[in-house]
Length: 574
Image (cartoon, rainbow, N blue to C red; front, side):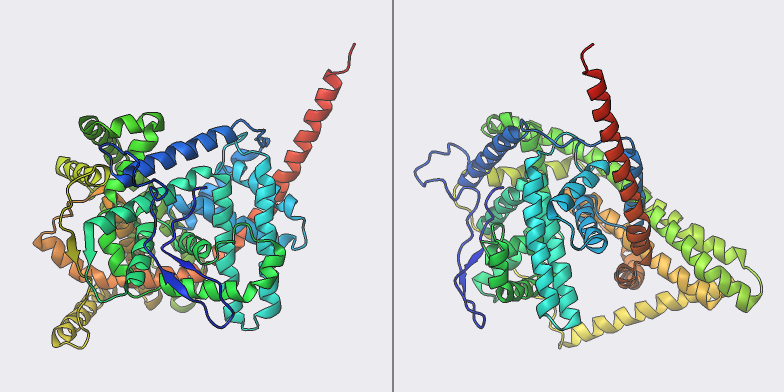
């Protein structure tokens, strides 16, 4: 794995005090001598290509080692289960494998807390292969030992949490924190291609620092930290777990090689570091710098595809501007077409999530409520609640359009500004200062927002009453309408990933946005609440997944036993 970029590095500390040194973060070209002739390429671009070439050679060497093979008799069952579960638990596609690793670890701890770590590592890898998160006969057998060391380290840490953290809320936070970082560490061991996350993040960070000047009154350390978190989230779509793991390796450089004895000695220090990292991630400036950085990430998404399309020819492509332009246009056209597929996938998953959740609520709450308190079923309200949200989600998908040629030209321009040497241009200055909340104008805007909020909810409530909605069915309608808007905006956000020209908003769409924003805010609140009360996921993880994977494991062992016996019989000389 390519070494992490260090935005700032931690020095030796005791339990009461830790001094953080601010330094300019190195980039993928940091090891390149200033005398190195990079030709027409910028130092950062030259270094990025070097990283890709070096790491690709390492991966090719690893592919020649003995690999883990699992039987696929019931592999399709595990795969189908994962698809169903992922449809119900709405997460981005790039997070599914990491979430699966964390879920399996959590279940293994619950099932067999004293189980040998080598067995847990082996079972974890097999489950990931069954579910097709990893290819069969691809993962080296040596990876089992690497994964078992990570599990051993984290199991020891979890035991220390139980022994020394008495506050239940803090213990729960710390336990969840390190289970999530364990899944990141394991995923990077099992998929060495994830080096691209760090290589590209470093590249975009370096480009951004050269092209932009952040003018707000923050220390250079704060700017570097928040900027790199924003790059992580916008370019790699890293969730909090991935960002936490990255910064854990910065603050505690020995984490990846830490032994059980080291964990015992530095437990308090590591817990303190986790708390400080959460403060960084939850900085109030982060949402604003993220939105600003996200607008410039599209070029690096395309750059990644250009490099990975054929790494052996990447250097040749980048050293010819015309060839690069042709390649970027080709990749953009392919990615624009892919947008429709991703939008359709997002819509289908959202509809499944909404529909199944609605059916469950109807069976558990709405139908019993109407039968007990009203003495009859109102099929109209049940039908509206069941069909309107998915239909709206479908309409959202139809309204999404792919970017055009102007967008492609802007992407080419940004890629060239990163790839090639040029005369020093004046940096683009920007500020993220928001409205002063004590100013009269802000108070007026807040009051107007409150009026829109009331108009929206009172207007919809009036129509629901005219349609004879009772209080429970009305609440359910609001919940699912807000979730549809939230999922719809998420799908639109995914579709706009490569859009650098921005969307033109007309008068009508502006009015619609003003009146739907309160519902969108409700959707965010409901989504966060459902995530904390995901009883359906708990049922699936412990009452369905646990016995299902046990059965598949037993059948896998039986199949291996029969295969060995058959080979023994066949190999007996006649």
